[in-house]
Amino acid sequence: MLITVTRSGGLTGVKKAREVDTSARADAARWEGLARRVLPPPVADGFHYRITVDDQVLEVDETGLTGDQRELIRGVLSEGA
Image (cartoon, rainbow, N blue to C red; front, top):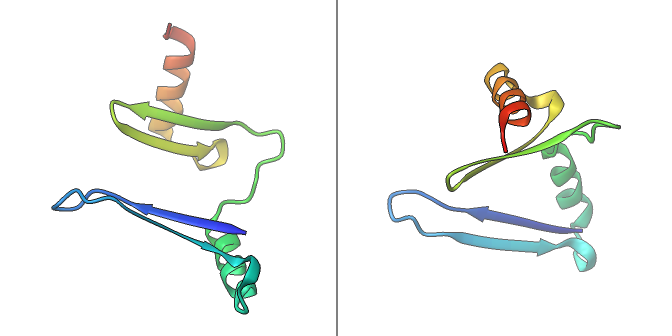
């Protein structure tokens, strides 16, 4: 399993990205278990949304949407070009 974390923003705006490949690690089970616990469960036959506003991106499954996100999605999908 390849786990990648990217951090950006902060006062200096420095971007930092690191990855861990668990395939040859003795502690692979710990890393993989932790990675699975932080990810939302997949939604069978559900929608996944990527909302981009200028340079900000949000990716979310339909089960995790807020009311405002649902309203924005409905509006853009029905009225957008």
